[in-house]
Length: 538
Image 1 (cartoon, rainbow, N blue to C red):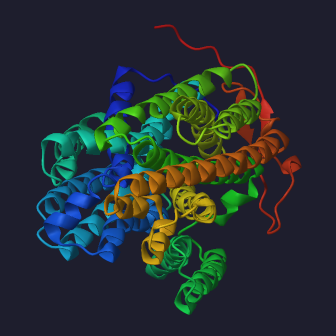
Image 2 (cartoon, one colour):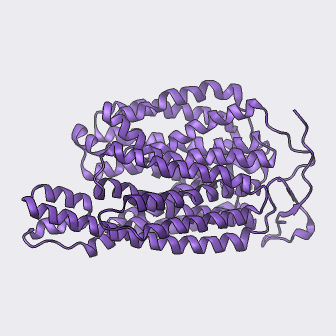
Image 3 (cartoon, helix red, strand yellow):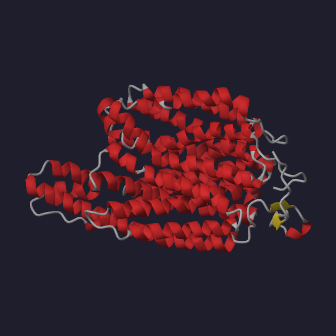
């Protein structure tokens, strides 16, 4: 939103503050994927069942997605720095609890508490970034750094997990959070400004419950459908989520101080940026999951080796997130986003050429190129969405942006992950001599095929694993082709809806009667280009 006074350039204090904000954000993202490699150790040490292992993994993302909107709005009301520091302290304590869990139920509870605390960190930190960096060019760069940490953390999770498991016990992956959160609690009040909505009303607790009821059942249903569970309970949960979402939207329209400000969606830029980020995250998360599985199950790398290879797409994401804001200072951010999506589509197109047994170089190059475009739309899309929101609703806008990303991760695993699994199952050829029980188990996943092959004699085991690797590679190639189509469509969407946004640094938003009105009579902000105010030297 524009202001009457020229934007103030950030000082060294703000940039140091950005580092304080970026570290816990990186950690929250790392925690989503850091357990992937630790699950076998957890199962052996705690005696966790397969169902319990799924809950240990998923409850964290469930709680983050469910509480993001509520925590972002809470930060608008009680202060974003305050809730950030409180959340950091709780996250550190919950990490200790998780590290020393003695039962699966204790670890599930600790992971749930970590998710609630994590939901306070991302939207509050992102809202504070927009408060600290008012100069549009600096804000674009700062958000690029922030989103690099957020997106790169998921890719670095397996690296961190693989390294820690190589030398320490599984609980060590949680203790990494303690010194980082201690730094946040100590340095946050010294380096970060406090900001809140001075006109915020009380929080509607029923809306908080309804927000959880609208998100959690949907994510649960999608994850169950991804595993092939088509029971009535799954569809009933999906229906429940849809009904509660409808009731939630109706309630927000009636409240004087809603939990979610639905008027934000009347702004075309905000709406389109969120849609691009949601759909883009779906594709990227699904492809990254299949890539991680490919490294271990097809190429045969150890967890640590596989984790190290994921550094390449993580670095590519950072490159895209940092180059995009600079490019957006010269041409429209919408055009840069569309161009980045086209670059990603080229990367995924390369992955469709993967060979059954020797495609590591092709796959690695493809996922790296694909990650560059993902970094671009994440940083610029977030900047556009937050820039289109009023300053007093920065927490709500940031939480909606983060919620889109979290939902994208869940939906990507549920949709593209399911597609890859379905292709694998249909393409797997069971060698003659393998029992029907072992064959059916092998069709469920390539991980099961590995287990079954270990119990088979020499050549039969080799044949089963070669067929499984070929089937998985085929599934990865088909999924990559689907990703190409989706990113091409997203590029068109970004170009059509966002191409008229002026380059960063030449935008102010004015509330004018000529801007047109929304359905309920509210005026929609418009964008106009103005000469950039001269910056002071020094």
